[in-house]
Length: 231
Ligand code: CA
Image (cartoon, rainbow, N blue to C red; front, side, top):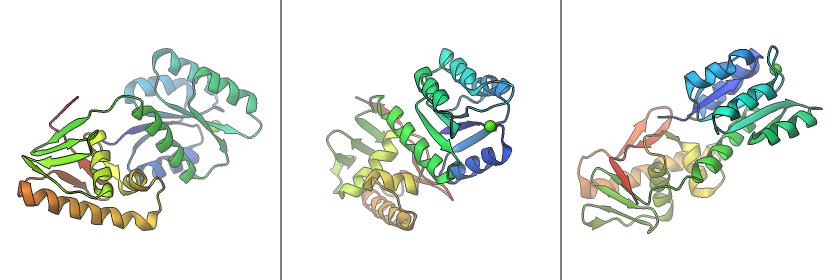
């Protein structure tokens, strides 16, 4: 499933804008507008990342950050206003992973979320061998095979398949897949991902028949559902 982001921000318009951009980028996003409820929202939603406004009425954002850290190492990105340098430093000391200074563009938030998630999820060692139906992917050895037959994949095709395999069951947007293959994403190039996916499916289906390996999630992106993983 898509990674979930909890947005703790009392300004409804900002929270909503950030949520819409995150959803457009393929994430699941939920809003919490009350600092006092933030920790309950966190326990209830179990997000993969928290965006935390430091300037919250009722409860200081730094207190929320402290509470989060007492029970979780969830990645935290702080939202701060200009002139809050001291708070920013304390926040980073408390274990926040990054900060964004207001006013910001929603795109910047999406880029930071992506970067922090990549950093934090990559530090967990990924499986080296992934099986999806009759497809076997050797991530370390850069090989893919269907049954006994080894597939001839281009580097981009392998990167895309590898990115999907490293995020089992998660939907990756075209933009996320672009970043995996080229490092930088341009919206205009998202269609090249569709072409790569088409080629991948053809190569896999030549060997595996009609078995469905790569799932399309309409309007969002693509997903693999590996049956088993192993070292
Ligand atoms: Ca605020």
